[in-house]
Length: 410
Length: 227
Ligand SMILES: Nc1ncnc2c1ncn2[C@@H]1O[C@H](COP(=O)(O)OP(=O)(O)OP(=O)(O)O)[C@@H](O)[C@H]1O
Ligand SMILES: [Mg+2]
Image (cartoon, rainbow over all chains, first blue to last red; front, side):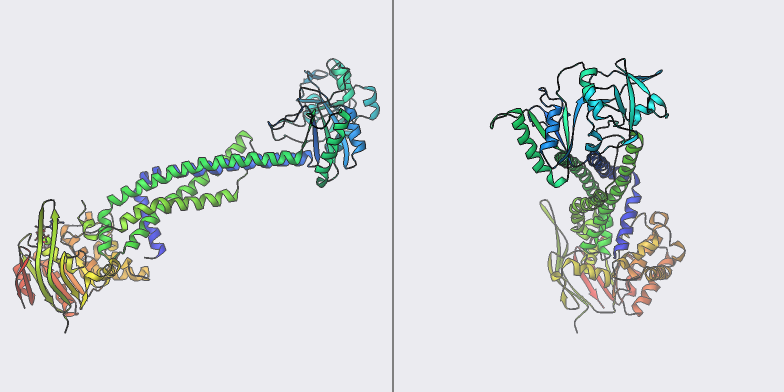
């Protein structure tokens, strides 16, 4: 028998028992489909984080107040507020590889921004300095950024993101318009270019920027100079570790931290965040792989079970074939082809289901997904392997039958 | 000259719990190439058991079976499969056709295990064999759509399709009316004329009488062996 005949025989046997074939395939089908969909989701998410980190700028280092913690990063909500704009200025001055620094003050309690009859609650209201566009590599679409003068005198000016502009001015230019924040009039001097949504689903264009002095003195009514974080942009990625060491030394000196004492700040680079993300997605992938293996194992056992039943049911057929000259290996090939065809068909259908599921997730839930060729190839290989592995025992049993005994089987 | 088939002291024993059943005991016989052999005997006398051993379907418990001088007991399962496929044509008493499979495909079955035979040729050979048994108009019928006699003829066509050296037929005309019976016997006559060794089990004394070599079994032993 040649391969083509064996395949045709296998397919015919599977078609003869349609319902049974379909039910047996279900286990593998669901297993493969979930692998494909989950991998697509995972890859979509990590690519998005990657894009985001790239958009933020790979050369960015964040200085956060508070002691270094082991529980990942938080966006500058340390309990002790020890960083000041003077630290930022000192870093820019003393560390030659740091191109620019921007202190960031998160303004809490901005309930709404009002323009005429429109009002809007921005997601993100920050006070910063004039280097912010350079550090974040975030140019203006229209107008100008606020000036050193504005920072010095805590002027009531602001720069807004595209979402705020759209919601307050409906496409009209916001430049020169007055908006009211905490019931105080602010002049809009600039409009930021559109950045889109970030990795954790925040709309970055829903951002309001004011001079940090305005944020502290005017909006918060505070006389302190503490900031939520300082962003540094290092001139090239290669200089990041050296720059971080220098910044640490400088801050030790400025904050009078003696060797052995706990730091009152911590540094985090985007590359570190990228590798943290990579780490997370690695753990995710391993979990997915384990889940997939379990579901495929269950599916494989289902195939083995059905093939054993099928061998018993078709004992007479096996006897007839052997009587007509089929060798053990011909029978083995026949049953193995059947289990492989079964699991491979289930794998292909599972792939299609997984691909359409991830398309659906992307389309209806707006979650990013990315189909991976690797996952597809591995799934196909895997389903083939399952067919061979779990089909082997029933096929061997079939091939070892004695012709006469098989023919006598009732 | 070595005979085509030589059995010496062949016994078959089944152990059913405490009791031993011995359908064949000390069977010794010779069959020459090109002979027509009839095997007769009462029901249960061991005819089918003997045929199964002759056709390399079953192995004897004791004794020696030489095919063209070669001891069959020493052959591997694969070699015996090759013999069943290429040397013997076997018509089972109970047909043993594949259900839910057309007559044509049933007849093609032994050819499936020939290496490198193109599908078209396989079809042609199977059609020719079905024509020889008078079933050219039933090629697409499944066994359950055929009468007992027609099924028997499909089984005969399947045994003939490989042009075997030895045709083993276990009551090949048991389900046939006298006219079809005569047609099949004529066919066997032709095969004999083509040089094929024909060994057939029958209850019909007329058919047995046609054979030049007649073997009679009784309770698993050779009672009569005349040429
Ligand atoms: N697998 C088996 N297990 C136990 N006994 C068996 C087995 N096969 C055959 N026998 C016994 O061997 C004896 C001979 O059986 P066999 O089929 O050879 O008879 P037969 O001559 O072909 O009869 P019939 O004319 O009815 O076909 C019977 O008594 C039967 O019960
Ligand atoms: Mg019998």
